[in-house]
Amino acid sequence: MYTIGQVSEWFHLPVSTLRYYDKEGLFPTMERQSGIRKFGERELEALRVIECLKQSGLEIKEIRQFMQWCVEGPSTYEARLMLFEARRRAVEDEMARLQKTLDMLRFKCWYYGVAVRDGNEDRLHELLPDRLPPEIQKFYDNAHAPDAAADREKAI
Image 1 (cartoon, rainbow, N blue to C red):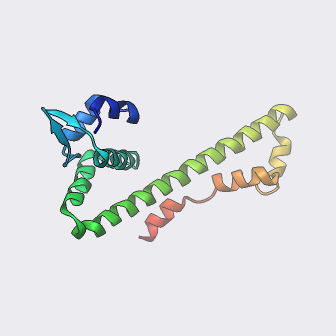
Image 2: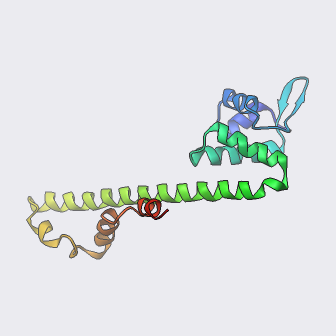
């Protein structure tokens, strides 16, 4: 069993956040000894999942619902699976969006590096849109590709 201070250090979370999570019912099986919270392996794993779900964009009330499903048992497996599949898709979409952003930044760094060396953009205009060096072309193409997440939303 671990103290709230130890868990706070390990997870880089303020003690107040851990108390808030407990108050919100996110640690339904937490033991207390003389009123002091004691974190076991179950709470540590719950905290890993809580932080994962938070990072994926869920709010505390939605995480509380997930934790309630866990308490309810096997009848909620499908709901839990659907939740994690939805969060996975959301994270994959965000990663794709960030990759497009990174590729545009990489392309523009290259572009303006060449412009600085050449003193103009003339040669660059001749290379656009499809005669760029291969390693730069992939950045350009991804940065200018249609948004896959938006296309998926339209299809639904």
